[in-house]
Length: 317
Image (cartoon, rainbow, N blue to C red):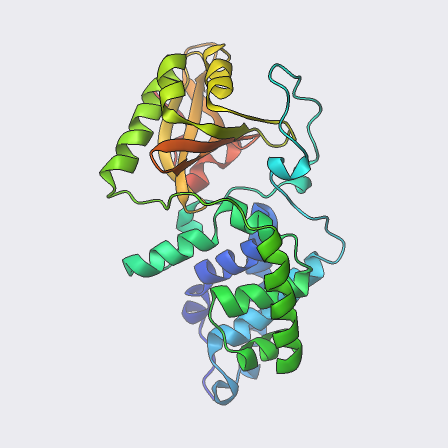
């Protein structure tokens, strides 16, 4: 009986991270779950029997148990638009909600393991922020069932083994999960395609307009029904002209945006000048496009200490 090596287990880290993140919606919790799953798999490696299934399914069963334990007392994580209607322009941000109420951003480098371009597209789509938020509406076991079956492509029998249940239970849970997800399906957005000249040009023009606080140019780039949000505040606003006026009103003077990839979508690290004029990390920003316009801008306040995860520099000098 082949015993899994440390190298074989470590090779599953990115797929495990993507899986646990879809279930948990949180960066630190995902890291803890993945590390715990790999440690447990290493300690129990002599129990692995290749005659009973592939290594990935065996390790995913361990990771599933870790995640389900973590979710027993957890509240549903969400995105700002889930908390209520759009704010009235000029309304106060209100008080920040606890960080545990929101789905947190993750860098593509930690979620996407595929090399084939078609598979990369599928993986990016499955970790979109809005998609992960929609998954949080499902009870934990239904969430795991749907991800295992519809995202990762495990068979009903393999999924039953991972969840330590029957194929009939898997089939029933999957049907209920699909019905619930259909009621909370997010609105569509463009896929991240670095080779798409139209998308690349749109993002470059947005960066130039944002850094110049040019309301007129921003209005031309933002969709009429565009949205912007700033977790951990539940506040969000809608409307291209309203958002453009907010940006142009100030508060981001001297800011710079440096590209990265966030949850399978275009992203940026926003830097702001300190008292000495050095541009320091301020927030990770997710920019979603739809058609030929900017559809949603999410500024994740409190993420300055996570810039290294997104491949962003410590400062801009």
